[in-house]
Image (tube, rainbow, N blue to C red; front, top):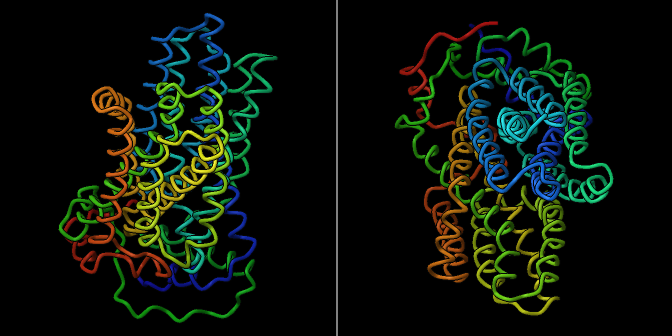
Length: 459
């Protein structure tokens, strides 16, 4: 096999243009509707409970089915992406996601809705694994941080839009149209994404060089690049399938464990701080108005945080950013529950959620940068799968801490977790900023691949 495609270097030398903007929006809109359908749970479950169509036990089962689907979907997406290609995986998960959303709108009972929601969760769990991985494989190193921030901005705006749409739709026509809106929107993105090409990096690694070269020429032509790039002088790598055990090989296990810890903490911190703080306020005797003020601040933070990140990420780097905003979230999270002034609650809450959104984006976004192309999405999928598993147990952990130590125990534990990740990144982190994905591969990764290699699948 001739390693003449040089996919990574050819993609990395391109100037940002229409192709990258198109990729951003097609990937981002999938994450937008993922956020939309994930966030509608609160409004929909409240409406079903109020009408008597459901009860608290069935509502809890609905949420459990959602988390289970998200967890399995994250792992499944990684395997599908590395085995059959990025294009197949992102279209497959969107088709499941959108189709199940439409079926949910016509569920004859809550039991059926729970079943539909579980299958729908498989597609939803895949979307964030796919989204961040696709962006880093297409966008040049000098702009990856900015595009990760913009991707999170598009996805995070789904949280705000869901709240607005639910306020307008549910009181007038009920909860079912919410699933229709999400399903139609998702299937529309699925149809538009047929124009998104396969990753040339993946095609090259599985030996489909001719296809990779055709796609690269089309991308280069759109960018106005006509000059040929010198062929890499590196020894060619034979295409092969690398089993998931590579993630736990000597060359890679440190990165795998680091990615798992970062994903668990960034997801746990995000859901715990933004989901439980309003409840803590009310529990301590504060008015519901203060709780609603936090909710408003939360909506703004999910937009402002990623927007700010898009301007600074390529300057400070992902490793430095995780350390900086880990400390930032720990400090504000510790202070926040003890505020009493409405103005202070809104301002500090806005800054806190902005920081949480930034930390979450950096954590999820830098994960696929840590792994070679052959198992990049499985690395990201495994890390997010453990993160989702942590979310299943997070309500019980938070409640146990609150009942035993009060709000101080909860925020102390969350702040400690953020500080732990910041310290871990300082000691064992990898700075991925401004570096090609190929340069980030483990130094002896080729040896690990040779030992674990199986023949590649050719399509």
